[in-house]
Length: 116
Image 1 (cartoon, one colour):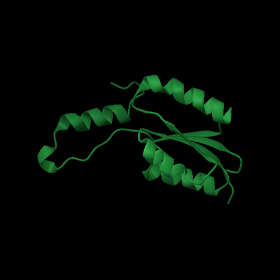
Image 2 (cartoon, one colour):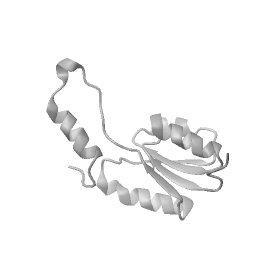
Image 3 (spheres, helix red, strand yellow):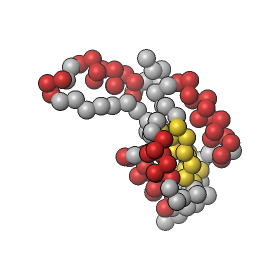
Image 4 (spheres, one colour):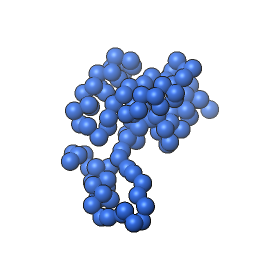
């Protein structure tokens, strides 16, 4: 299938997991992607050997970085055909370290348009 032939998509949180898998699927179907993340080494590894994958170190949890993402997207693609807002905050805690506040903060960040 070539559902993404000549399509340009931005994926936040695209250096691993679901974001990277999505980027790989779009690439396999003829598209180009700009992936973002906070770990430059992961971004470099994700883009290795593919001219249709672009990267940007960008923290989706920092609203002031949205302007940088917009400017880089315009510079690379001009206009885009889609965006996957996959960036978020999370963590792993053992049951003995689990408390309501970290769960609340993660949920509040990942489900609000204005982040604390």
